[in-house]
View 1: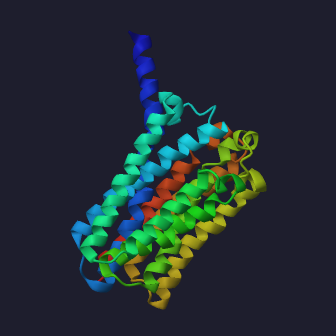
View 2: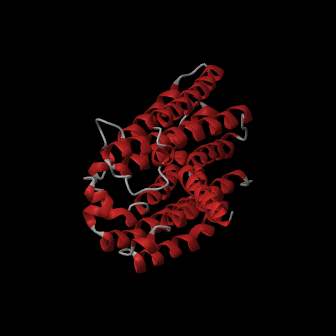
Length: 301
């Protein structure tokens, strides 16, 4: 009985790691931020569009995560990854089908927004995000294997996604939205960047030349304070210039997470067993800085 309980607990942990619940803040935050800025500039929110967009974003990210597991199983990079959905189920075709279903429903929800607006701009932006997401791991592109995944991530979850959310509310464009999207794009990219520190050997074996592989773990760790600093510097500059309301300085609540991330990676960058959790520290930075940046736009008066 005890052995069975231990086994069940282990399996539950593997499934949680495979599903990655904390990562879905990555899908929600661009919609939150774009909508918050729309409120800041227009003083109105269409809640039906907002909730539909959030649902669609979660489903589209689920598709990307699920299909990335499928594509990685084909290159062998996940052979030591116990929490891969393909490794857990041993049913690659079923996993692929579930991912495709998530994408289909998510796109249909975006098309519903377009139908409400009588405007197809949002679907164009989201299809652009989907293409970048597919090109990251999907054949024949597999651009993540060339070390370009972080660039794709920045544009998909930063300027494109935030602009789509803003446009879904206003049917217009905003320089404020673009500036804020750069902040969110960088914090999202840090999550992907940090996810490579503990898997350098597996990446090399599969021919995946992530930035961590190309630069080495030490030089990569030295970049974190620079990009972390940029996140908060843009906010501060925006406030000084009067582009952002002063309440957006609430996002500095994420600064302790940024400091913790830089210190943790700086000390343990070459120790896979100690550094494997650093992406979750990056998730904390992304969540709090993004949530409170958006809140700063909402509560401005």
